[in-house]
Length: 370
Ligand code: F6P
Image (cartoon, rainbow, N blue to C red; front, side, top):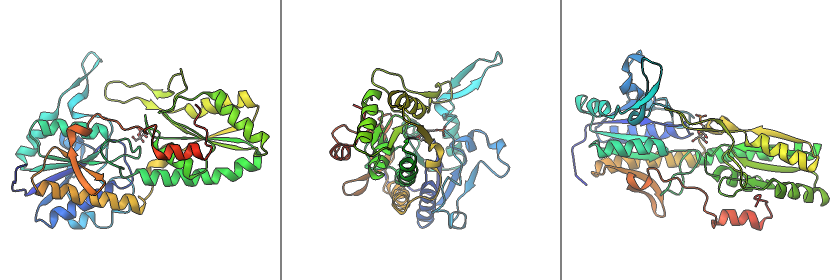
């Protein structure tokens, strides 16, 4: 830890957007201003630095108090974001049409040096924090802020965006009970979450779903169908099945919309249809599918997410002021703390099979397809 004089910092948002990003930006900008530091926002991940010509005003904008006033409750990010164009593996098309990846991270370091930017606050999920860690190793002063609706980052109890996503998914499940019951149907609800089942588990239990399928527990459609049949026999002729997009059948394959390619991660989706069809074939019941998708990423952050975001933003600035670098702010047992980026980057956190929330679901009789 080195105490240093900071005058100018930059902040960026990377990966999929999540409710609460604007609250972090606001908090970083105001906490910086209150220390007499100038704060700048890099547009669209690092694109503002890598492609300044794309921006009419500037790829890096000054974040004054006035600029960030009134944005804390808004969804999305005023800076823009991208989950493509990782500067360490930047996709380029060669003259012969083939694609390859090049490392453009030195352009970012050069930008910081020539514009006398002293530090970066990088707000993002696993991918963005891995980039932040690499930039830190190359000498940039960096503090990370954990963001994702998926809640799949290690070393923090929660990420902002998750509570908003779960709240919305729960409301949707609540609404589906009455129509499912009226028509005696099976409603299958597919939710995001990538390779972790946090959203499905939390919204499923909170919303009284009867079946929850998640990536951490391989599912068997025969078991799911048996649960639906059992409910019918007991006189409850409808069922709600919550499926995480990354859920995978025991001995089966994950459903994907698009394979990973240079510059793109794999895109998940479609498991809801497969589950609905499997249930219909096995039970003869009418099924319908609702895919919540990107609706989970929109809207205003809940007060919990807003508060976490404001706490994280201010804590990131405090961490820089105290001389930290290469760390991510986290929500720990005793409030906001920090951990080394190295400990977080590349470490996905799925739902532990022994967690009490999962156990709660089992105690309540929810079927997990196993
Ligand atoms: O990581 C957030 C997330 O919303 C995942 O839950 C989902 O799989 C992915 O991003 C979708 O990404 P895109 O916005 O590229 O469709």
